[in-house]
Image 1 (spheres, helix red, strand yellow):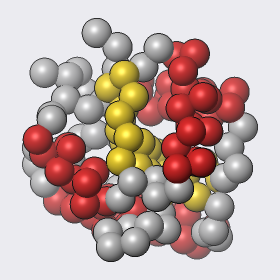
Image 2 (image 1 turned 45 degrees about the horizontal axis):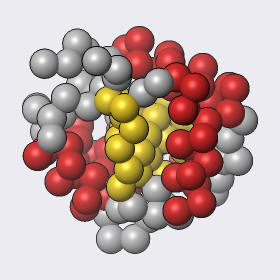
Image 3 (image 1 turned 45 degrees about the vertical axis):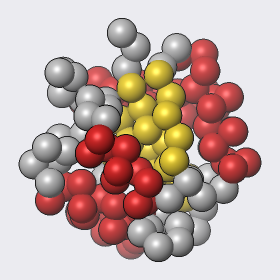
Length: 128
């Protein structure tokens, strides 16, 4: 069974870019447009091996999503890869401090993004 990845971004175009970048890896890709839907997906459909999320989203942003996941024992171990084009060095450090596994700046480079995703998946606990 291929690794299961949840991608959270409020921009449809970015979800499409990520899909195209990751298709060669043969992953099971699932998509959400906001943090609330992502939390529902994680709680109702356990077994995700990686979460990829934007930071700037309405209602529940990436920072809140990370904090909620890290505080929930059933989800706390999932690697979290942040994608964003609007944060600086200090914000990146803060995101890593609150529980992000890795940060990738937008716009993404497909080849290096696949390497980042593969590295995060190597950190994922065995599903099940």
